[in-house]
Length: 461
Image (cartoon, rainbow, N blue to C red):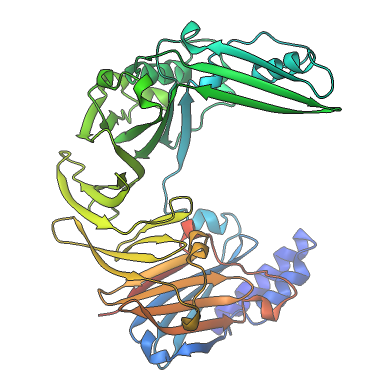
């Protein structure tokens, strides 16, 4: 093994000399590459709380050198680190993202974009309207213009966001005036299907205030609803849910396609680009009540079922829908959360709903539905950090039905591990290695991103 590492190190050093400026850095890194050392620091509790926890961590340098460390944690820490070198293929190629390459596609008729404003000076669209109003008033003055939406559209302006797997739209496709262009044609077909007749007489009001050489702009939509959406792309279809907010009485909700719900657009994988969306086969997959707002839609990595984070009459719940037949498998009531800043993390062993106030731990049942196991409230006396930090990169979770391990890896500070049991922190441990910044002027060996599985953790039986 030492001979293999020695040969590898020699090869890397020669190549780095040829490359140039990275030679000194790489030599410094490789000097102790086969002697990576991990040191645990117990901040709270005892190492015995980590007994049975297995961890795989990955650190990379310049997308060329990869360290993989397998650890067995507990009262005794054992680990083994292997170094591999990737010259022709980067580490990212060797360890591709665990997520499919989904590209978000926005299609919309925004309220303020339905008015075809004439160009003014060098400005277009809304900017032209602001410029025109600005030039009509003296310093300290105010100018207002109003447009009746019914003069430009008979339907509610929609905003739909969906994903397509492995598809990248051309830049500026939404500005293409060719309605037969594939992206435009597909987007229009989706908008036409979900067209909702407009009721009432909503108004767009533009206001400009001239203050010296500066100005304040504002636009109001008066008496019009707002449509938002949530979507999920899978290998076989795109699922879309939309929600009407604002003045809902100005929308003919009874005319919504097949009514409220989760809609399914099948994918034809024999085609490429937007044409793989079979817009002539859109169907309502699962019905929803009009007062339901779908905040998030995800796919269960184990069962493939659809998971819907739903708010209804101020109550939050998780619904599980069978992706084969649209059957409701279960509803799990949840505690209210800060919906402005939260994350729903779904992994093989555990599902966590994390916001700035608490962590709700859910587990999968045999029938595919979920149960709420426990609720964890952060407390300073347990050396807890704000859970909002868990919305960032390089985090992993492991759950055995009783113990929850939360792990984060930071190139500068090390790997931080919390173990919780019955909602209480039983251990807080910091693992620092010779790959972390304490050994360098700056972080040469950061962990991979979360999508590339920087940390994998599980409890052994």
